[in-house]
Length: 141
Length: 147
Image 1 (cartoon, rainbow over the protein chains, first blue to last red):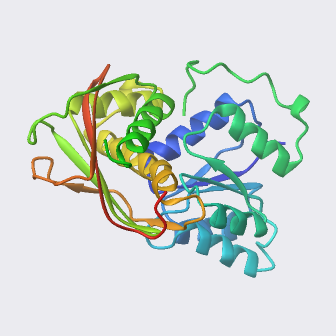
Image 2: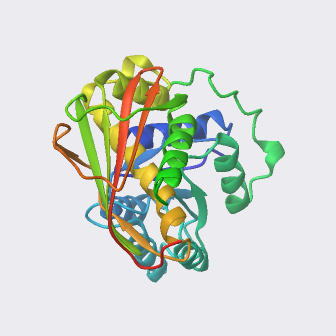
C-alpha cells in the first residue's frame, strides 16, 4: 500500500530534494503533497489524513513546532506520524519534539537516514522496501 | 583566529559537501562587491545576529542543480532558494558550535540582501568550489552562553 506523504518546507528546492530522497530510498510512495508553511501543512493534513508528514521547523506564517502542537491537540490528527527535517540542533528543542511523538532528521541528511527514520516511525518492515537506488541515480519528480 | 572562525569554516565546508555535493578549498576572502547574490539568515534566542552568504551566479546554479538532481529544473529563482537553504543549514549547524547545544535558536526565513554592502563580520569564510565562489559572513551581537 503506497504511503500518503505530505512534505512541509518553505524552500522549494528542499521540498524537491526531500521528495527525490524519498524516491531514492525505495519507500512505497503515493502521490505526495507539498506545502510551504505550517498553516498550509495543517490544512492539508486535516483534509488528507496522511500516513506521514515531513516537517521543517523554521517557516513563515506558522512554524513546524506550532503546527505539531495543533496536530496533537486535535483528536482527529493527534496520531499522524511526523518526522521533523530541520537544521535545528538544540538538545532542548529536539527533546521537546520527541516528547510530542515526532522523530528527527538533521539537515543535511542521507537517503538512508531518512528511510530508516520513516521505517521506524511507520512500522514498515525494512525487507518490504525495494532495494534503495544509489545516490546519483536519475529519479524523476 | 577568533573562536567563531573554525566553527564557521567547518559548518560551511561540510554543508556544501553534504547538501550540494560541491567540494571546496578554503581561500582568501574576496573583496566586497565581487558576488552576484546574497542571502541573510537572522537568528535569535541563545545567540543574536545574522549569517550572510554571498555567491557567484554559477555557484548558485551548480548548488541548485545538485540539490535537485537535474540541471534542467534550475532557474534563477531555484538558485536563490538553494542559496537561502544553504545559508539556513550552515547557520543551524554553526550556532550550537558557538553557543552550545543547550540553547534554543530561532532562525528567520532567508532573505535576499545587498551582495555589495560592506559588512564588519566577526568571522568570514571564503571558498572556491566547482561551480564558482562563495563567501559566508557571521555577525554575532550576543551569545548567552559562549563556548
